[in-house]
Amino acid sequence: MTTIKPGTRMTLAEYRNLPETDGGVWELINGELYQMPAATLEHQFLMDFLVRMINNLMTVVRPAPGLAFSNSGLALSDLYVPTPDIIYLRSENLSLINHGYVEGIPDLVVEILSSDRNRDLVMKRDLYAGAGIPEYWILDPVNDMLTVLELSGNEYVERTLGRDDTLATAAIPGFALPLEQLFGDPMRALTRGNR
View 1 (spheres, rainbow, N blue to C red):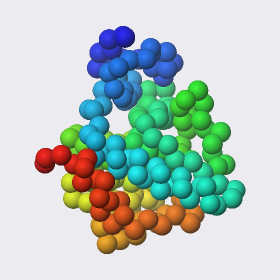
View 2: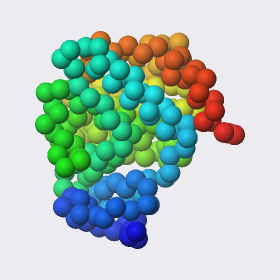
View 3: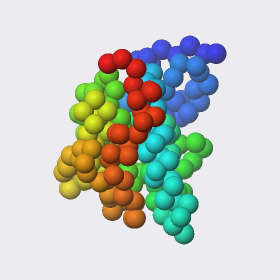
């Protein structure tokens, strides 16, 4: 086990050479290491649920339109390697996967709000828009809301969806998820604990 300190400055090459740690998920933001807070069980459940729903579509549509996966590094530049909760790549962009990272601009990223809400709502919104990521979803488990941000020029245009809405997107042709299935899943209640 290696001890890594938050705030350490490094480049993408140095970040890639970090040894395996048991210290959780790390991101490189403006050349500085940042340790993500540990994901709650509810956070993990929602992330896994969304990945499963997206990838279920890939098993019935041929050729598969793309692939969703969770907790992978996204190398946007030499100084920026965030770790979105979910990354989706269309089939024609799967070549962006390189040595366990996505190098370049994915078609969609998803963040599930945690204790550091400002990080996802402001910092990552600006980072993803500036990088040119065409679509960014922010899932708010406290309020059972999902905000879809679609890039228009250099800024995101947002639409907010609740439990009664169906999530659909041009980024994933054929995908439609009634959000009641996500927010109302009985298994989710087991992961919520006491709030």
